[in-house]
Amino acid sequence: MIRALVVDDQELVRAGLSKLLAYEDDIEIVGECSDGSEVVEAVGRLRPDVVLMDIRMKEVDGAAATRLLQQLDVPPAVLVLTTFGEDEVVAAALGAGAQGFILKDTPADDLAAAIRCVADGGAWLDPQVTPAVLETYRASGLPRAAEARQLQELTEREREVLARIGRGRTNQEIAAELFITEATVKSHVGNILSKLGARDRAAAIVLAFDHGLVQPGQD
Image 1 (cartoon, rainbow, N blue to C red):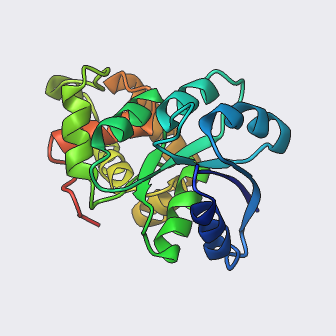
Image 2: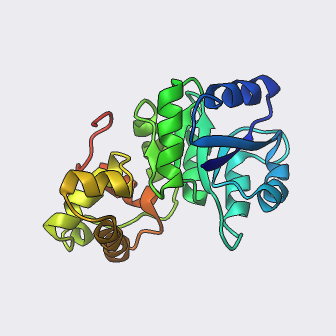
């Protein structure tokens, strides 16, 4: 069972998300927060696997709350909830360590898939807003994963794995597609991050998009 914490300053949004996810047998909403200032305490108390994080809140916004969570010994995965036009703050949350972002009006099946993906260690970038967010991310001065020459250090298999990471695949899905074990996928992911100097899978995704391994909207 995936334990999820919903963080949004609008009560109707929190209620709507909880209602949508109530139909998922493997996802449980364990709590709600109305502001980023409440998140660290709630995570310590409820131990969620995934935090669904609103990006604009009154006291502590989603990017700042994500940054605070990264200071925990075992931080939960953060999936940012966004709307069109919030590229700058979403990019900041990505730079702070969020595992992905998704539009608030996304269909329930896609939302559930995104939660499962980040809970499994993957990264999820909503294709509708990815180009704008990545452009803002590149221009923000946030740490970049690597240059093209470092990409050339990857083996052919590592490039295949990176391309699938960029498409939001989990380790389990990558293993099934490439007919290898999950342990082998994890080994490849570790090598990829090390060779590229990438902090996490989200940073590796930026590189995959930058150098054409993945195109926006590509499945």
